[in-house]
Length: 603
Picture 1 (cartoon, rainbow, N blue to C red):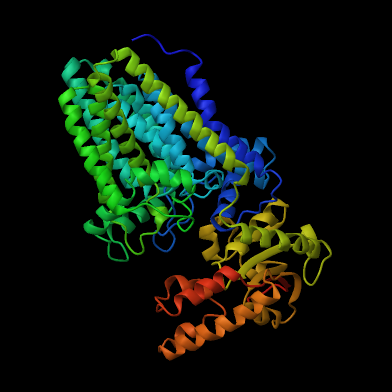
Picture 2: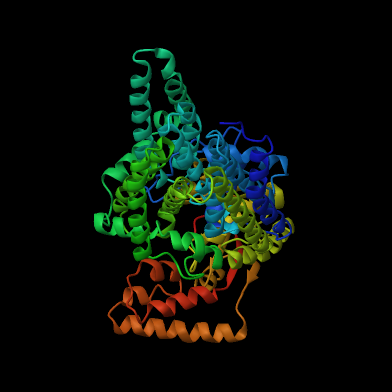
């Protein structure tokens, strides 16, 4: 097989990465202020390289104090973040670079297969997935999103190992480690697929060379690399009691709720195999994989049809006896089976972000179907020469690649955060808050103060409070939080409120009047995003929701609507008449205020 042109990999990589670059640049003047998990991420990235370098990931649904497994994403984001000035935009740019690196890794692994069609095929599924995920989420450092393109790199590397390229265990371990450390739902699927490819590699080595130890070098090197990448979480496990890894194991082994089960797991996996949605639906409605209400989503029936088509292709591949194609189908089979088992073990609400990796499996299945069809076409057409058919297939793939890149470039300038209202509201609060601290309003003493920050949030679970902590740290203020927030932000920032010189309180909704009534409270910032008409609608819907809850015997929830709307709407198990009312209240939004109070314990 002749070598591929030197320009091919850089050229295809540029076509894939260019929309990401445009999306990042489009947000450079957006004055983005990270909130909630995004703010936590920036705090951890800022800590990299110092005495408080993180050893574990962000807080997750893992027991009372557990976090996602590891800090690898923080370490990888930090260099670009610092190089570009440690701003919020620098974090977005670093995220775009990290995602681009995942895409290019997948392409580089595909390039080793020595086939232009394989490289173009992988590039096409990466572009289709980028369209489905949306460019905004791919430039936003939320931990379920950060591994999205790296998981594709993992699957392509697994395919390469299945095909006998054991050197690709190295990128497989790197990609799997990043995915699994960043968001725990990636852990079981990467471990499951990883175990299979290591076993396959071992069997292949034994068959090829018997006891020749040199053929094991890539397995040993991959194991050593994996150990190095997991040293920080291992250190945390040794120095803390309980260690974070132990909490993860305990959480997975003894879940607090009932798992959704095999039937629901298979159904949800089928949805993520929907080839029509990947190729057509997401091209028409980009971002539906993440923004689940932005357009028609994947369907279980179409996913099942995709699975049937794939099974037919497996039979054809067995007949054709093409080793590379059979390795691809074996990888798809492994990932699909492991994926269905993984989803079946989800407990509680099966939120979409717990299964985002499933679309990567579906994309690889779509590629395997297309690859089988192309091979059948190449070998079966009699009117043309095989070479002409091959050139036609390659040309079609190249045209499709250009079309998908163009489609993404069209939407790239509109890339934006998934929380635009929250980040804009935080931006309107930060300036007045900082100005109040600098003017020594109330108990504030500027940069000389030791501040204790906490929040009472009616609508977004502390989102803007955590965001304000991040913005104050960015500006050099000495900030501490309570023990619960310390799990979210960093344990070393936990502070006794009596050891502060002033307290800063972020209050929203019904909490504003309560905090304003505390002794010594001074308001330094306030924002109400609602128009007069929206305020009137909010008051009417809120009164109606409270009345319905009381009529349904849920007075306990009715009392919390004004002060804990977010939790009541999300976890209150309210009836079908109340649920849309609460959803609309969240959409409208609530006023937020920031207060400075004297040191001490809040009443």
